[in-house]
Image 1 (cartoon, rainbow, N blue to C red):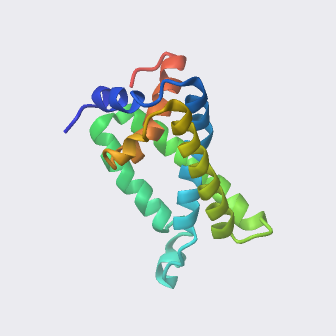
Image 2 (cartoon, rainbow, N blue to C red):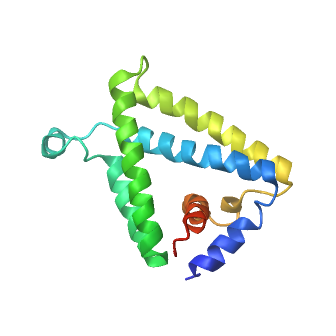
Length: 156
């Protein structure tokens, strides 16, 4: 298995252009949010709903991703859990207050954010990393978070 520094370096190879980097700072979180929202929207059996309104496919996927992230970095995993907790809270707010169903809002965000991602890579002149290896779909958020940790002087 590749190390976290190897994966971040490889991911960064197709993200040097400042415009593409900015696009990623906007679109990667939006894609995460919208994907979690789509998973959140899948109806759960009544027995699961009675256990907790927070138990759904989105939290299951988040749990699986955390297991992957733990193999790479415990500290970044904690950061991702905090990011996801904020997103889960935001999803609950959108679910309660949006004029459209949550899944509709998330489909719109998902499509627009991916258009932005591909435009950013066109500006960069390089293909997205996930076309080479799907695990880079999970590395993208860590790549952004590692910059936050570095700016705060935190080890990861």
